[in-house]
Length: 368
Image (cartoon, rainbow, N blue to C red; front, side, top):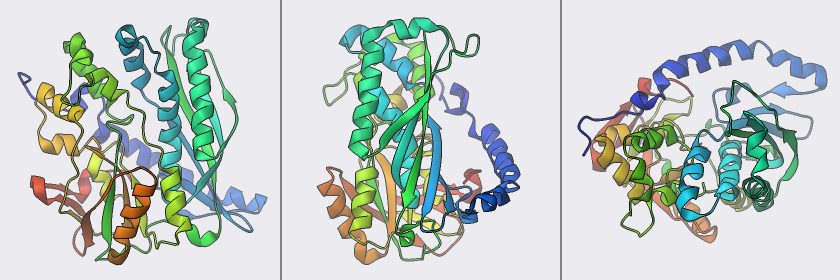
């Protein structure tokens, strides 16, 4: 057990400082919305604050997301020393997942994915095995989600990116066709079921916290977990791609009222919708053993963990109660476990996790 509890904010990621700036940027961005009209488009204003921005064209909606991996590749560089693998094939999937898992929450399916790979100097590119794994992994992930890899940018940012490292990010444009597939939360109702879909582990959020633990105990990545994996291998489990799931739900004609990609802010994200409801969880899916080690080594309490990490649930789907089992069945067909975990209730905006006696008030999520 850690001598004193460590919080995510103490590791260097403080949402209370970052979120107000995000909100300020969103407010300024609204003033540019009219420029779409000159090109025959129109903003879908309700998409501002969602994971993906949506605009209307003559016969369809389109959506855009740009996202970054974060620092998970730094873990891969350390773990390579004892696994012999670069892990950059799965790091590529992580990066694309960060983009497209946000894109599909509005009902968009990815058409084109672009890459942004910034290095501190040319040294990173000289490791041919690592670079090849990144390229092959990127192509494989694009194939898995049915998207075209259009191109990208590979700047050298001396004195901004550290020498020998790489900053990975990307963007995607998606299509919502027919227009009836647009999902923005306007149909959310009291009584809706909240279906949680499994994560593969930590995904790519919270890695700064993990690295802060490794800074105190460099051998933590070699620690064996109860499932036989090392902690480092568990952290590097590739992020699930939820595109096939959402595509299957749409093709099944389910009445999707809302969807959430559970990333930063953890289970607080369950109340991301603009409408004020209480989101009550009666059943918490099991968290993978790596979360247990993180909690043990940091001394963080359950509220800290569930307020920042996915804790075994990477995605949430909100549907009428009589469609919850069909979501679970469809997820199973896609190789994913799912649980009818709770329901939407009338009341103040908050997330209530009953089995853990945790409540997150509405103001604890400062950004939509």
